Image 1: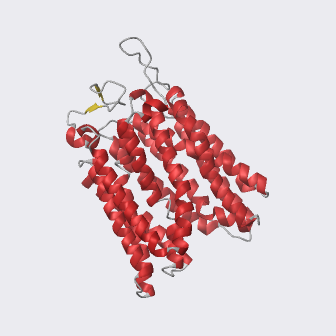
Image 2: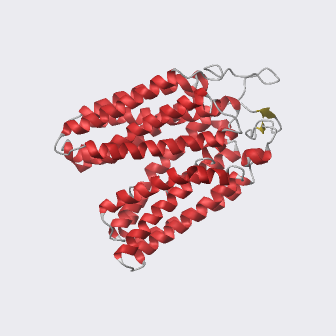
Image 3: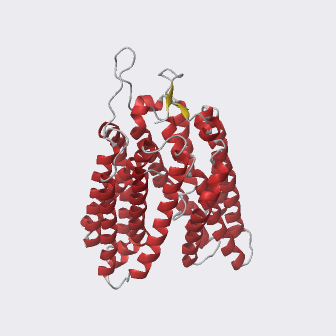
Length: 431
């Protein structure tokens, strides 16, 4: 990695480390430590998704017009303010408003960081850059959660305040580190005139006319709905209600998920980076379908409690294996599909789809996982198989270089996929 890419990865890892301090304990903090009740805690958690949905539609244009660096610095500053305020909140209004600021800041950081990774990488290095980011973020979240768990005490609100201040400090570190990055191009992307002198087309209409990107967004929604949207809602409810596992075992299962990602990421990367991305994603759907079947055995197989517990932990571990296969495929594919002047908008659109799935997933999966055990498993086995079908369908819309950049482009020249309204032939040199 170059110096700029190393600094971006360092800042991203430290911000994830800060998030790990507070994310596992947010519900307990609001509901019990500040004694604001379970209803307020639920509202605070929902506000994070709502704030993201409010700001992400405007984030892409800001990134493409101003560049990702200033957008990231502003977002990191806002997130730091929100974290500090939440750590000091002792009323419903203060907690909700703080969550709005924190949620908006962290949501904007995602596409800004992704665009910086795109600018600081080439088609040949982009796969590894995004895999490294995913690895470091999971490592940071895991370590932050473990350290935070040793510091908190529900009888001492000041211990939780300290966690939020640490989180705020990590966001500020991200902003400072980002400010030292020398981007390999100008901080803003000037619009390159077309042959007839008109400015290139951009915006939502162009994105929606791009069949491959629309199909990738649909696929992304199903991926996040069927996996991440179930971790702490439907799957957790199913595990405790149907499989009868202890709530503390869910922490072990989540640790197993993170451990598989950390251990397997670069082994998996060697296996998938020269293969077709659409085929790799299709395999993830099959792995997750098997994971849901294993979960079905845990809750519906009438085995021993030990076997049920082992099956639930294995389910989370299998999800981790699939996640380690997705990290070097999906995010780089979004970048490779984007026209030169719309990288930020494409990244923001995909982040928006992710947030929608994370908002809808718990609302659908939570009640099903708690009460409709059999239909819940069948539904998500089918959703996982849907990932496989959608991935294979997407593969027919991709050029060979987009689907397998390292295998198809030894000359390191990338053919850029353009929306249908634009000429389709123009390959461009790697950015």
